[in-house]
Length: 496
Image (cartoon, rainbow, N blue to C red; front, side, top):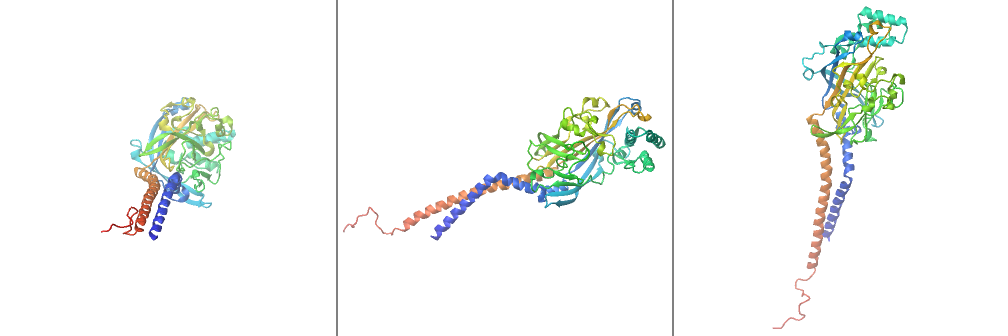
């Protein structure tokens, strides 16, 4: 009886293993998703969190400068002729700092410290940003002229005298280093002495103050409650929306900061990325699969709709500032409101997706190519990890004639390109293998576990059933006496 009881227990145990295996088989997608999320959602502070705080692969910041070759002729009204010089490449380090979990770990506050170091062997041959000079429009001078154009004759006269006293010219040559990281401008310095507080700084540089600094405090969703919200921005610099644009929709802060995304990305969903450089969010849509270090990624690219004119895309009306009367041609974005009132206009490199009339304002090397000049994000579809990112942007200055300022009175209307940049990062082979192993390992563990349970359950069930049946036959044989006559034996034996 004891042996039979043990076999019954064994059979029940085998059936339990079989049931577990079948349950895991049915629940496989849910279990797999759960384990992936546990590793990549920021709330759980595991693999994904570490790579979010300290990106495990290099980031490069490449800059191509636009050199004006006919400055004297432009002063007389000629079309600007520009040539591309570069790239000047910098190794960029972007680490999260002051990382703090808030609201029961549902939100994360942080700043991103950016540092730049020149890399000569990845730059144009013989590049030296401390020596190489670029001729372009004098942005501080133009900004002051644009500002006083709305004021009275007294202020305009003061600017004319200040420009004459400091030797400021409409077009000047500066080193690449000065144009990027800053130099003290004599006109701004004089104005600051005469009218304190009128200009925000006496130092001008397109990225002045950005080296060894951050662009503000972000608060993002940790993904704890909803994994699809992982890394989505909730506030920037303490605000849940912007104030630069003229509609609530255009002032919305949508998406992430571009460094991290949620797991299990759906190709049909648009991705949104907020860029503090252009003070707005942009949309990216799925384009195609692409191989990155042996991993198949989903490529998302910036959509032309974000830069279309208001006729083609009425939603962009909110980006016309200060009102609808100041809408720019398609392909351009006026960002003067968030760049200290300088007449800065953003576009994609080489005016990609811009209206033809914008390109017709210039001569030179302008040649937009979608594959080279669009912004793209190549994401690993299971974890949402960025495998390859190319963020591309061009900085332009809107130059035009100012009739009350003799130095500017003959300038042709044009959107003069100053530089275009590419901020890129590509996963290393080592990290690609680590990411592949993480997703494969979880898949293998869950997949093998389900069949292991099912296999063991079936095997033990067969063994236990066989043992029980064998035990039943043996019990029947043991119950009959050794010398007992069979049913065919005669009742009386034969006599000798």
